[in-house]
Amino acid sequence: MRHSFSQNELSLIPVNAVTKSKGKIIASKDSLTRSIQRLCFQLMEHHGDFSGSCIIGIQNKGVWLAERLKEKLYQLDPKLAILSGKLDITFFRDDFRKGNKILTAAPTEIDFLIENKRVILVDDVLYTGRTIQAALQALQQFGRPASVELLVLVDRRFNRHLPIQPNYVGMRVDALEEAYVQVKWSEEGDTDNIIMFDSEPKQI
Image (cartoon, rainbow, N blue to C red; front, side, top):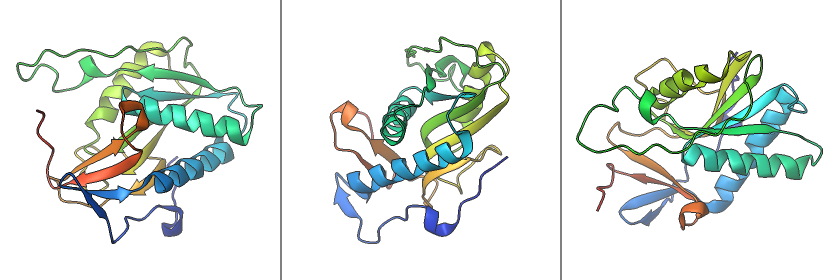
């Protein structure tokens, strides 16, 4: 069942967004931290002690978000025992055979069966929905879950190609289809924030 949120539950994009490298910072480190804490409270409300649940992060940035969620959940309740894993979707994507680039898969690390468990699938940005479609296909290798819920930090709700909607949302961003939203993490040597570009930055 999809969880609905009222408008005041969601982080709003600040009007005075700061420009950085031709992009705009739409969420600062403090805002990102508050969003993660709010998401954790929502997870605790719906999953209790997590005895029948697990958290699966999609490689790579979904894994980093999942780790932040686990860290905050343990701070809120040290008695929790949360099963978690990492899921790579490289060869389940519908476009992996396109182009000349050699793809390198990240490790999938799920050392438990998800049979009859409530899976919380985690990613940083929900855009077209194709990443989540691939993740659902990849999950089938590990059993038949009781349910799968989707948690994302950023929901680009008007850019979907597939009928996929999140259950838990940190921030909703309305932007043109060609815009590019990027979550930055300290794990990649940057400051935690969320940046929006007019178009996807070119790789140098």
